[in-house]
Length: 207
Image 1 (cartoon, helix red, strand yellow):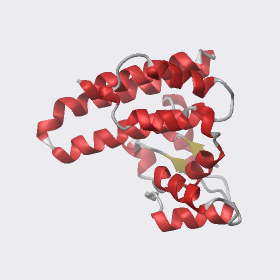
Image 2 (cartoon, one colour):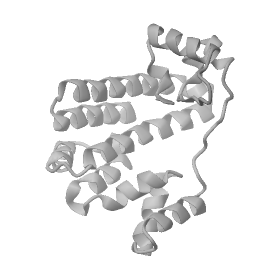
Image 3 (cartoon, helix red, strand yellow):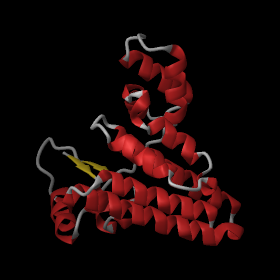
């Protein structure tokens, strides 16, 4: 049984799982996927073996992508996609499948320095991304979350001097997660969701 994401279990689900872990069915194996193991019940954590999954190396990522493509992809494009994927072969394959006209590439350029982006260019980028249901929306969400995560990591490495910015980035991350969830639950306008996230990123970067 694969439980993904275990972080999102409510109290009833967590207690039900705990009972199963205490008296598991014969010949059973439970795999709990968690981005924040600390939020799981201590009694659940005590009955599991922690296995930390790290991103693949650059060479391993390229090897996996080339294998999936049967070495049929353009070498330069594969290398660029693998660099952007940061150790995630599936992300690289999704990147390679995206049409160049989808707006994702323009979003990537926009994220290079969002604090200096003025005007309404982000509105056009969001419109281009949502013009066709090609997977560009999901990849764009991942790119923006990667940006927030990378910025937060840099702040954490700086230390005490970046506390306020780190706090702002944590709030932004939570806001983004809420926007993504609301869009999925209520089928809200994806373009508006992207625009709001980009507005938050721009504000965070310039602030």
